[in-house]
Image (cartoon, rainbow, N blue to C red; front, side):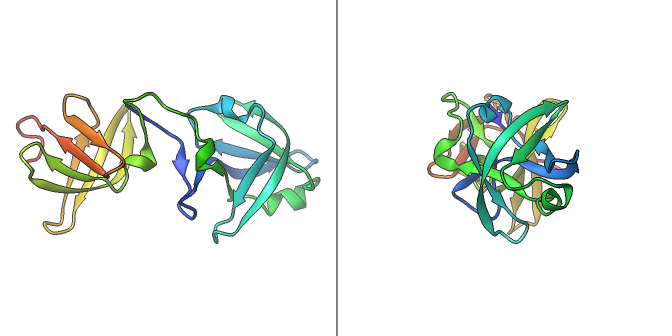
Length: 182
């Protein structure tokens, strides 16, 4: 039901696709953690928006990329040494939200679900989705209720999450008996 491609926390109009974790080689290459379920999206990309830990943005020209296991190696124009590339370690690389990969009708990005209000089909307010947690191939909504100081873990399954409206930031659930009890 859900796909990973993270909205950058510092910029609501960007979708993060990678995060630099270390330098590689002598030519200014960066090893980056993939933040997308769509690695093929790097094909044909000419530019990425670098977002620093402080939220500062800059557009970088992507000279080349290749995959190394579960990571991607990125080489940007003007970053031709280890020293230059090391200044980008910790940065997230993003594309404009308008360039995100289109999903099927019943699929959602994790960041689209975060912040959604959760209510039962009877109208009981349960809280707001704080995050989407992935454990062993199962997606779980972490729902926080400020008033009761309770947290609920609700599986992101069609039989439980019977209506998802990301436009109105609302998810209606039909929880099985015992799911909402401590």
